Image (cartoon, rainbow, N blue to C red):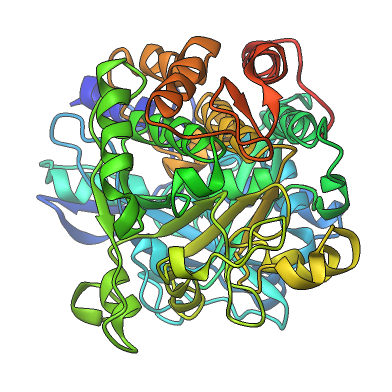
Length: 552
């Protein structure tokens, strides 16, 4: 069993550590065949069991002093309580050891969550950084007032529940394995060593914390290095070679927060431009770039388009598979407004708001509904008669817990740009007429909408290859990576060849460039070579440059 236990502890390195030659705990519980048989108190420091091997577990009590030094309130010490909870998160099973993760919860003021994450990250032997920040239900915890061990810690106004892995996970593993005899510490009865608590030096892996959802409440973590790179990507796509004034609509970290949210997603739905012959060659290439990366990450992806555009977009998807741009086909569906609950039934199983089919909606270069109910292109032409009311999905999603919306645009008339509509009205040409009135949770602005799609794909790659973010996604347990996944992600990044192939397919299908109406290899009146090809190359080079960490 020792071999299995050693491997089990390695699969959750923040939970357990193997030590030798140390005095065993003074107070312990004695499980036999999975059931507690009582509390055992040792006779003193010299007591030992020569035929047993001791494993010493890191404790979150080890980082409390550093949190207090940084000004982070220690609610559990203030209240003299410490609650521990079984979660629905499975540990990686090894041999007979198989159990759910157990966590502790510490209430932390919202403005100090990043501080708490950075400090505890430096002490991985005391569980390291948090494994979840936000709604306990996302861990399978139904009621914080009823911990499985200990007593509940009360939150103050403005506190956020922050969860760390707990050494009591080992107790669960031992109980479930039902050994003939084992000893474990009693919760709260810790072993104090004479080993100095020496934190790790700060590094580019130090976590930054971002709120990505209000309902359910969810924060995410990414390393300083990854955050800095994604911010550089955001800066690159904000360039404005067409002189549209798009920089006036820029909101920092919309790309970062969007991609953090997508990284947590399961099922994503993309809203294609209403008709490529209307939006031109901008939109579909960026949508395919994002879909390719999400599929490589194991997400379910669906495309929604207007009824009149089904045939053209189906041909585009089939051509993308034939040319290797897409590795698998993507379902293409339409939305019909058959009544006031149509959007709800489209988004949720049986129209039940608690059973969403999709957790993310992404629109790129899709004309959005203006304040007067019409749809306009950037020249101010009303195209309402050509557009299905797919905006209703964004409007309905705003009231549905667990669905995040993302809009990508380059002018302010696009679906989702309602988040910055006052800027659009004041600063963009025809803004008071064309501004989209429907807001997304996140609005990514770019010099060309396709560029926003390329940047999303690159940022998702950066997050997957970020150890800090992956640890958080996996709740501190060992990630189950499939062989060749990194190679698959690398080949799923945008490339000049792939984007040129998509644009060629659009031209063959008769789709013209927006702005000029040319049936040519250009997007928004900008030639593919060198304008778009150079930008794709720069984004990918920045993504893969191990030395370009950026400034978080």
